[in-house]
Amino acid sequence: MVTLNLDRPPEETIVLRATPEDNAAVPKDQSFSQLTLWLLAVRDQRDREAFADMFDFLAPRLKGFVIRCGARPALAEEIVQDVMLTIWRKASLFDPHKAQAAAWIYQIARNRHIDIVRKESRPVPDELGEDPGTEPDASQILALEQEAEQLKQAIAQLHPDQKEMIVKAYMGDLTHQEISSQTGLPLGTVKSRIRLGLGRLRKELKGLR
Amino acid sequence: MPAITHHIPDAMIAAYVSGSLPHAFSMVVASHLSYCRDCHAALGAHQAAGGALLETEDGVAVDAGLKSKVLAALDAPAVPEPVYETRGIYPGPVIQSLKGRTPRWKTLGMGVKQDILFEDNEGSARLLFIPAGQAVPDHSHNGLELTLVLQGSFSDETGQFGVGDVEIGDENLEHTPVADAGDPCICLTATDAPLRFRAFMPRMLQPLFRI
Image (cartoon, rainbow over all chains, first blue to last red; front, side, top):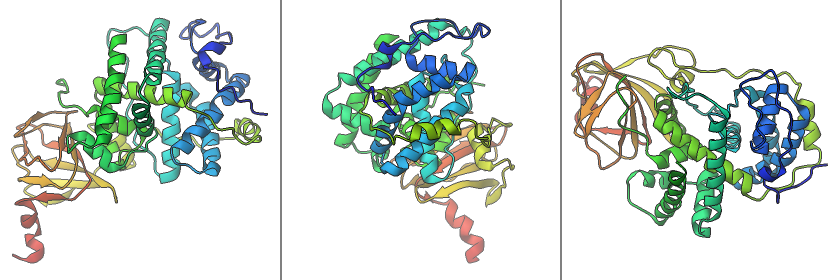
């Protein structure tokens, strides 16, 4: 039975799962978000229980998300299944220093959805090495998580119109014309709204640095 | 490698992240992201925004059987996806599009060569080879054109573009890019409409029409 627990943000439901003793790259830190802890448990221990918990949290969100992205409910279930299995298989590539957990899952969900619909693999960038002069450590992960948390709050504070545009934009629901108009061609109301929203997001992000 | 000075606009990175950018343009954006730390950071920020929405938007209950179906499939053998990485001057997304082959250059005249990598009804992407000192004649665009330098450099009315730099052209840009001295300039170019060459196209067609 699938439980819906959408009213609980994952940060408030921290389950302290032991991180592996033998993996020095994964610090024991109790303030990582639940999603990060689940992903690390799956990555490092192939923890099925963590994966099952993560399924309960993610699957309904993913389904709502892909429906919002234009998938019919039957296809949405198929995509949710595909995304969850992709998370399981690609967990070894998850690096919380480089990508915030929800961000990593969001990109997998968009890529799988598009690959399935277009039957063509999306181009993905090469990985860039560590920024010279930065040592990966837990504080970096936490900083990234805090930034994401504040971004979430920034999104929540947006005017409904702006929020709607942001949602549309990140669900891939912009037409080609709308994108063209983002590059300096004649402005439409769509563009200015996105820009307002993104500008505010960016400002919020800037304040974090 | 000199610093990258011409980047992908933020809104286009967001469009790439969300998948609303046509495939041909995504190839150029992903290729630029393979060089550019700044734009990679922007990529991460937009992915985080998408992740925040994924976490906070309303969910829809999944079919009761889905969980056990997924859990049962965890051990099923999966065909590992191929990983495409930079080879020589070509970043991973170009290697992916070449599917392991080397470019098949087709002569366009005046030493300029191309290899069309991808084409659909939303646009096309090609590799362009321009000998040092050669100008790509005056052309304007019907729509959007992205040009990423993979080797050498070129200059036009708007500036100089080296490896990793992207030039963005639209219908307002009429320019004459000239490959700089040194190595031949190799670019990855995506367009959403046929290029309108002012002088080049007729010359290309001359042999066909026996002018």
